Length: 111
Image (cartoon, rainbow, N blue to C red; front, side, top):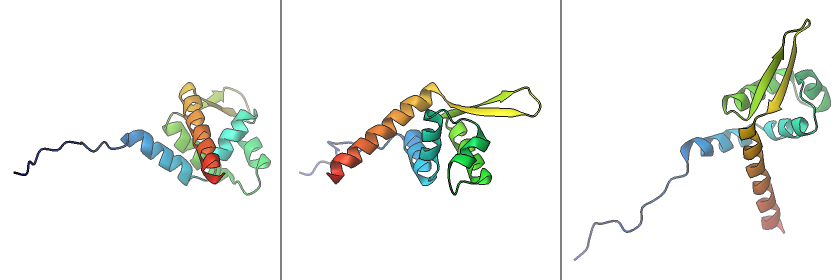
């Protein structure tokens, strides 16, 4: 007699975190932004000047997307002219560590 009872349940990937990783890798500039922030380059104009091919429009889209996920945060200073800086959040530090682990895994697979 055949039983319809399932022995193994299919576990799906965590929906939100999987989408976040997918969106970060879809934006080719996110990893560059993380690298810039780790080197202390945290002002948008300085970021654009530091990377060939990066435009202000694309950078702003990338920064906005990363802020929505809570990976980076915007700090606005009440000055004239306006001053804005971006920093990695504590959650963002954890997320970037995971991306570093993925890079190490890729290196092991390539070796």
